[in-house]
Length: 366
Ligand SMILES: [Zn+2]
Image 1 (cartoon, rainbow, N blue to C red):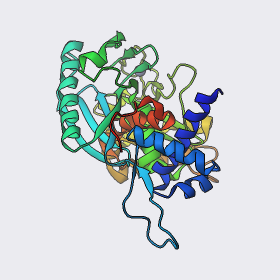
Image 2 (image 1 turned 30 degrees about the vertical axis):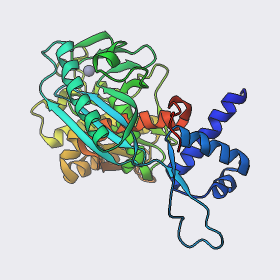
Image 3 (image 1 turned 180 degrees about the horizontal axis):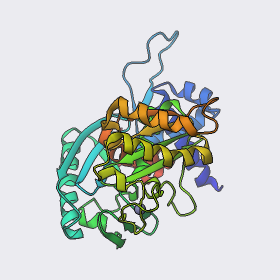
């Protein structure tokens, strides 16, 4: 690491500490992070210049001696955009650095049988409305992430395939301009189930589990896999395509080209118990392979209620080898249909926390 890498890393350590642990004095930060007081002071000045932290007027109560000015993450005045394209809607939200969802805009309409341009125009409208809300609330938006229902290459900004949208090899490099995001605005994209799993990890049922599988179900069905607190992406980011695990080899054709995929049972007239049985069959393989603590049911699967979750658990435990000793928990997501959207904004905030120098310093004095 050269000097700027070291500084970037230290800025990240201090910002993350303030975001996760709350406001405190500079000397407390120094003590808790192992950095010197002088270093912490310089880092805080830098973060103040970028508008990512703020000085607080009221010192934390209960402290003895001369009160020092506490600093805290600019929780309510800095935020990120979460954007989503799904089969039946587009959406945009703003989540602030404190983790609160401040605004959500949706446009519900079929995206399958219209042009990509129409879908992008719909997304641009909800994005602009969310950004206008942010401006009105005094939230400085510092980045955006887009959730997509398919296989995504975030670096190349390409959506390889979204079978339910009928999008193939979609070049999304000019998307930021089409959405009228500000110039040089940090913007990336990822698979919606991966982002849903990130939201669960930070804000939902995943907070209590180190390893879990988030099952996302809306237009299609996918999974985001968290192992030991980290998202498992696979070699190409393609991991977690649970919806295309074959559960009935002679079943109906799927949008992916195979037959009898789990996803084909999501919209068919299969009764909930049949769906629970097929879902448990697919999950059993996952549990045997990676041994998660829990499965978190999201989207339309969460909406099916506790009875459905219990049915999945019963089918799963009945034939899973390790279930007698450590049965994999089956929970409903508490983030309902917002998991991917909130996860998208969370990913954008995470990028800033990992490298605060992405946010430019401001001209004005503090
Ligand atoms: Zn399939």
